[in-house]
Amino acid sequence: MRRRDFIKIGAGGVAGLAAAGALGPVSDVLAATSRPDLVISHGTNADANTRAAIAATGGMKAFVSKGDVVVIKPNIGWDRTPEQAATTNPVVVATLVAMCLEAGAKTVKVFDRPCNDPRRCYVQSQIEPKASAAGAEVSHINDRKFKDVAIPKGKAITSWPLYTDVLDADKVINVPIAKHHSLSRLTLSMKNWMGVMGGSRGRIHQDINESLVDLATIIKPTLTVLDAMLILTANGPQGGNLKDVKVMNTLVVGMDQVAVDSYGATLFGLKGSDLGVVAAAQRRGMGNADLDKLVIKKIEA
Image (cartoon, one colour):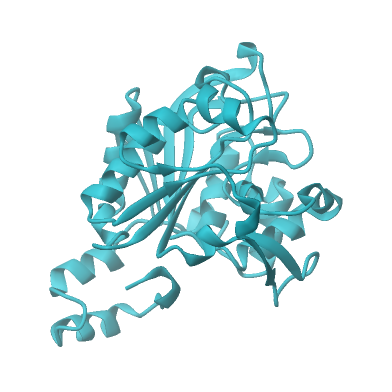
C-alpha cells in the first residue's frame, strides 16, 4: 500500500484480508501488527546501527515497495561537519538510501533547504557525497517546485508553500538529528519539516509549536529515524563547539513522529511534555507522547 492510501486496520480485519489473499501471508501481516511503537538501537557503528534498527522495526520492505519513489529528508541546514552534530549523520542517511534501493525503490531523493550556503552545507555535512555514492538523487532545492498547500486543520498557518517532491513521493522517511534549539528547546522530527517549507519560514517562529503541528497534519512520514549518534546539547541549532557535542550512539525509530519526539526529549533529560510542539501535537491527537503506553524495544547493534 502506498503512503497516501494507507489506513489503519484492526488486527482481526488485517488477518481476514490476509487470509483472503488481499495483503499477503497471514504471518507477514500479523508481524506488522505486532511491530513495536518505537525501536531504540544503540551501537557505535552507524551503518550497523541503522540496519539493526530498521530490522527490529519490521525491515525496510515493510515500508518501501518495489517501484516506489522515496524521499529521505535529513537535516542539512548548516555549514558544519558531522562531528559538530548540527546535521544528520551522513552514514545513517546513506545506509537508509541503500536499504530503500535494496527493498526495490525506483528512486531515492535526498534534499533539504539549508540556512547556510547550500553547496557548502551539502559537502561539509558529507551527506551529498555519501548519499550519492549509495545511489540517491541528491539535489538542491528548486524554488519552482514549491506550491501553495492548504492546511485545513491549521491553527497558526492555514496554507504554506511546500516542496512538491515531498508531497508527490510514494514514501517519506524523516531523518532529523537530535539537538538543542535556542527557540524551541530541541529540534527533533517535527521541527525537521521546516526544511521543505518555501517562503519566509522564519515567520512561523511567532507561534512555532502550533505551526510545526500544522505542518505535521499535512506531511506524514512513512517512518522517522531520529539520529542521536551524536547530539548537540547547547548553542543549537547551528552549534560549532565540540564541547557541546555528546556521544549517544543511539537511533530512535518509529512510525509516530510524536512518539519519536517524546522519546527524543529524554535523551536531553527532559520529558516529551516539556516540549511545546510535542504537547501541542498530543492535544490535537497527532500521535502518542505517553511513553508508558508505548511498546518500546531496545536493542544493541
